[in-house]
Image 1 (tube, one colour):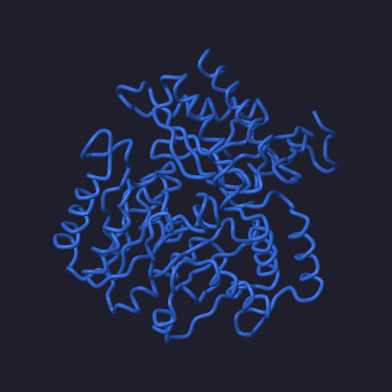
Image 2 (cartoon, one colour; image 1 turned 120 degrees about the vertical axis):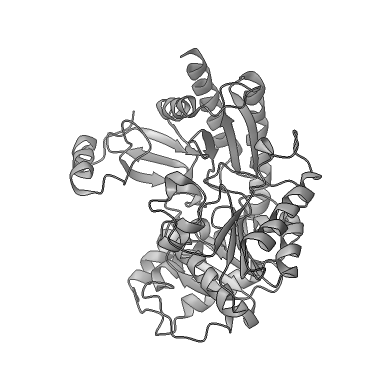
Length: 438
């Protein structure tokens, strides 16, 4: 137990949360964690308890909490120029855009900055429609795109869709979900033909045959870190291009080295997207969304547009500092190495417990699908929630996902050490043992 932080205690904050915030602003835990301080992979609550953060604000604090280089750069920028809007030029916005162009795949070169992944996706969809002169969009079941009207219509989780369908022209293809593959068990690369047939049939039967774009997360995040079978994205991109549409790649969660070896998840499949969207880990928790594309596509946006806070100097400074740390530390290689260590430990847990149906992920984006038993594969959200709570009791913060809230998600800082990974696995093992006994 650490020293309690100065300021209101956790009970006062929890009471204020209930009184002044929307009820839908729902915290993870039955007894919510009131976080007051963070450093690296550690956070402390208002009562002084220390936690090992292995979810990093939904994969957002990519180089850890309060990285000193990011803090220093933000303080310097805030003392110099805090805001300007996109009506003025700033060196910081140009510099971050240049850095993104250097690490983005293929010919992606020009960026538009917003404040969130939702806004980045909105920008990408509008741009695809402008460039193609078309309006129908194909997304994936189990996909998540954000909380705006358009993004929630692209999302294919009923729990995350607050209204009935309100945006016409959006269709949802089958998710490439190997653990629950509708075609073959175990799923393999032969299933790609079936997924390709589904996409093509969807285009010719539920659209006018002229889609503007196909949008997909390289690893479906909220869906439970769903990794497609080999060859999937090559076929999907070929099909949408054949019908005259664009491929929009969603790297909001999987981007910036998290999947290991490459800067972006789509690079594992050797596919160059037409438009790519990013957010979360781009600026160590500061609000930045980015949409990047080829110059000829970017040029299609000819009407007026503005983002009042998009590309603001403070967030750009955070993004530049984060990128500098990522490049220097070679986070794709680090994520591959620590991801291998994490996966080895999680695989062992999967062999030990019959209620862990699947262990999956790439790099430092790993998941456990919690089920009643391996034979039935019936989702078990109650046990998953129990594991979330029990891990918290062990001082380990992790995440939930999946259509039924039955998938445990892990995504620590990309600077996580070998010792911290071993510590997290030991805490997970104790949590699993306690849940198994309950």
